Length: 245
Image (cartoon, rainbow, N blue to C red):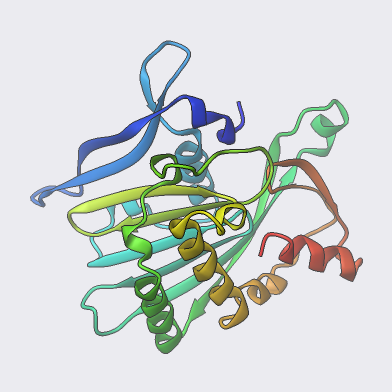
């Protein structure tokens, strides 16, 4: 089942406690959940998918982060991390990635990712601080996951923005399906889309993806079964990078 199909099965977010490390206080964890085929409460497929991808591209597990504040925005080609331990100095990275399908299985109609290409670019402290300020300006930390927002519906394909927020005491996992569709009716969608527009327009986040070299192949993209990419086709590559953004 595609993660976007979870809308009818989603339950109130899971609240539990996780040990960060021995001797530390417990962390409250907020993750959307649903009932699986055995009618057991399970974490959302988006959470499972992101956790697997996180390991493949060597990102830290924010569920166990002890940073004073750590923010991660994930699209299907980038993960943007901003964090601080003292609210005076800030660090940031942009991790670019592409998920290529197994070509043998693809010929049989099976869409299974067998290779993930990635690189990571460090942001200077001033840029990381500016993005943190942007998070604050758009009140991103106060926006609940989309299934808790009345009027925010789910659909197929489109964009999925995933936000993780971690402090020593809390961890939140939130998803936002195609906010641009709801900007005329939902304040929260305007906040998320405004935040994304600033990242792309003023911070040129999408441009970082150009530093990732990938071979020709069929790649996972925007919930669509497959996107053919040939790095020598510049116009096609630009569309692959920027159609989400």
